[in-house]
Amino acid sequence: MSSLFLRLCAGFTVLLSGITAVGQTRELHVCADPNNMPFSNMKREGFENRIAALIAEDLHAQLSYVWQRMGRGFVREYLDKSRCDLLIGIPSNYRSILTTSPYYRSTYLFVSSRAQRLDFVSGFNSPELHRLKIGIQVLDEEYTPPGEALARRGLQGAIVGFDTAGDGAGSIVQAVADRQVDVAVVWGPLAGYFAQKYRGSLVLTPVEPEVDPPGLPFTFAISMGVCKGNVSLRNEVEAILSRREGEIRDILDQYGVPQLPLASIAKSAGEVN
Image (cartoon, rainbow, N blue to C red; front, side, top):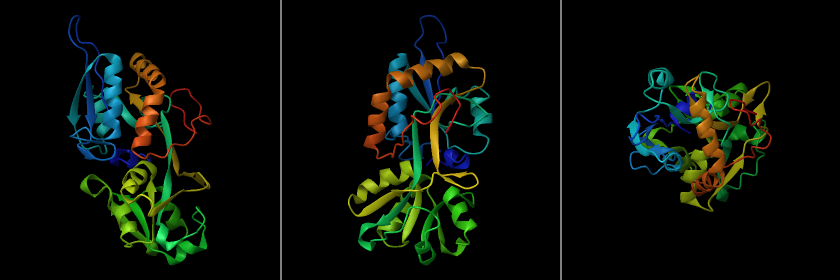
């Protein structure tokens, strides 16, 4: 999960500019984290880089990047000031911007070693969790939703925090493989991507239920977003997402991104399950 997504409970980012003048080439300016695999990096190896290239191709636009680590105030400083026009990975219910329909939906996963045979249920009420060391993603000393769910159950002492930004992105999955923790709860795209390195030796189990009562979600729909009022750009991107849906799904599959059905989600822009 990207750092921006985690802060919003949901991390990833792209910019588009319009045609500047008659006869000039249209440019697609992508604002992306320079070191945030599997989402993006400066080598353009992330799945968001690949999706941005699809969008640029469909727009007949030249693709270029503004490399910037995502964090608090990013929307205000980049999107609202027209330094960024489109965010490519944003929670669908993020009300500060105008969003497209979701183009994928994913979930947090329990990551465990197959050799340990931890046949616990996929929920946070499992008694087995009380005897385990549990890896959790942290951001600015704050827990992601799974960490909050464990803390509600008095399991703070079992938590081992991992900073999964930048070069340490895969550290939480590696810690499970190396038996440094017994199990980890990891945002789906991150877990699926780094678990490919340990194919067959790790077990990935979706967290259930999707919401920890009364309202702590573990699944999130991801959209693209534009500045409020820029309906024409939002609609243009919306059409591309529909047109290239199959190709986008293929890209996500290649990166191991767990994809939940979108059928249960309202398709109108800005809505989420």
